[in-house]
Length: 168
Length: 168
DNA sequence: AGACAGTATGTTATAGTATAACGTTGCTGG
DNA sequence: CCAGCAACGTTATACTATAACATACTGTCT
Image (cartoon, rainbow over all chains, first blue to last red; front, side, top):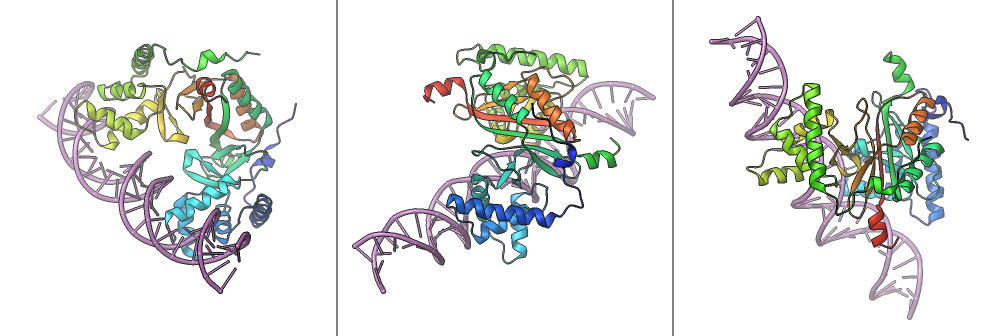
């Protein structure tokens, strides 16, 4: 049975090299799009870069605001379309409980979605990919005669750092 | 290790005695409120009854529409406040992926929230309470140094009935 | 080159979801 | 009586998302 990874694996330190996160994500996105014959246009790239601006989920209208800083502000459909594209290609995920979007940090097999740990204090959100949890979910579905297509797993609480600083 | 329950346990048949579901839910709600010293007012009762109108999640504005049929239509805050109350007392759950609400069909211990199986075809949604899944979630949290407070588990797919009728 | 098909983006308007802020009512206990 | 509190009413507005239609770009076929 696989052992869960230690905490350090999941939550990035405040001091981590975030520029590297962004660069890596953009580079991998480029490759993934090329492989799928999808157009990684400047707009889509820009939206993905904005989403990857932090490890906190960002709302569609915040993305609009960010786009507005580099020229004139597009209308909402522009950003929603870009987000739809990025979601469809597994480059971002929607966090349902916050109506917000976050960059995908896992290489999924076959469009499956991940599991999220969301800090209610700092907003930092990490994507996990726990095989035991995935297995428990598919077993629950199977036992119910349910044909599982899509899963939303969002766990809210306190990340290790906020936990410590709030003395919880 | 506990064995998962069979499908019949989870998805209610179309022919089931739904009036009984409603009556049971309202009765238990009354008792729960009394025990917690909370006021189960006529409005709150009415909203809970509307939410329990089916096993499909219902939107806040649909609840408003339903309330409008029995007199004049209240403003949105009225229904949101009732929903807040019902959620706080564990009588309804919010389905994040649908911006909608459903009656709680489990007796939770200590305010924990459940796991939902949502049929994308008929909308029917059931609340599961799978100990293996719960365990996997707490282990994931623990391994990440994460203080889990609240979980959102929403599984979308096809219920046994729709699965059959769609030949999937 | 010119016509066309398909995809991406722009634009306008509107639908759907949720809350802030303040007012009113009605009950309860000092 | 009246101070305090909880529930509910009312008005206005914020936030999130999409429908519908217009324009522009890209490549392909003749």
